[in-house]
Amino acid sequence: MKQPVLRRAAAVSAVAAAFVLAVASPAAAHVTVNPSTATQGGYTKVSFRVPNESDTASTTKLEVNLPIETPVGSVSLKPVPGWTAATEKSKLDTPVEVHGAPLTEAVSKITWTAAKGSEIKPGTFQEFDVSLGPLPAVDQMVFKALQTYSDGNVVRWIDEPTTDGTEPESPAPVLKLAAATGAEAAGAASPAAPTATVEASEESDDDGGSPVWGIAGLVAGLAGLILGLLAYRKASQKA
Image 1 (cartoon, rainbow, N blue to C red):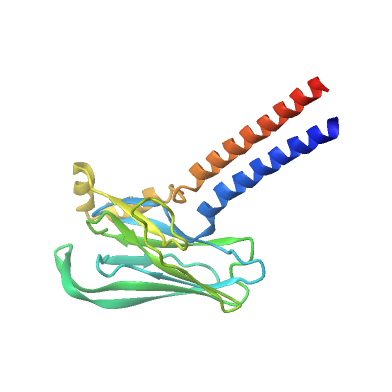
Image 2 (cartoon, rainbow, N blue to C red):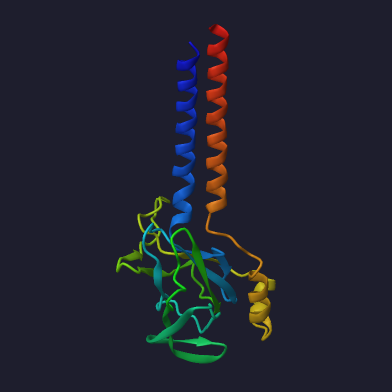
């Protein structure tokens, strides 16, 4: 009598574990920008987090496109050991004013390329830091990204957010921008604001919702395990 009960308990636990993986994995699988929120008009440091999804190939290149329709006047890159970085600029159809001066071109693309031996190996990830500002007065910035593997495969993280809240198949990194408060707006106008904003952002490590989904998955898995144990105990008492 105990063997069928044990099998049922094991089946419940397996389903719970599978549910945990199904819930937690998608949030951590794609290229993300962290933190995922910032303030309009301010400066911030963001990290493009790149996990390697292949079991056999390494990531050798990352290309991130900055939305040229909402240009950023200042783009600074933090060196990554073993990687070279290059930026491309594009002419603006309509010049924009940044700190009182007209901006006629802006960085539209950043490309990081790995030297031999520095690739992102299977089972690992890498972060690429960028300082941006002043941030445009829009609700969000979508950074379409291309991830190139050593076997020639290119994963295009270019799908924009959906209107119904569901995650697209290959989501692009998205930076949500909130309107500045009175104090934040005054700080953004200060010459020292860029440094202060960048330093503050270094303490943030939000991965765009992954912890929330991971906790939800763990809670669901624990609930499934408890149900399995209760079923086993009840059946054992009847036996």
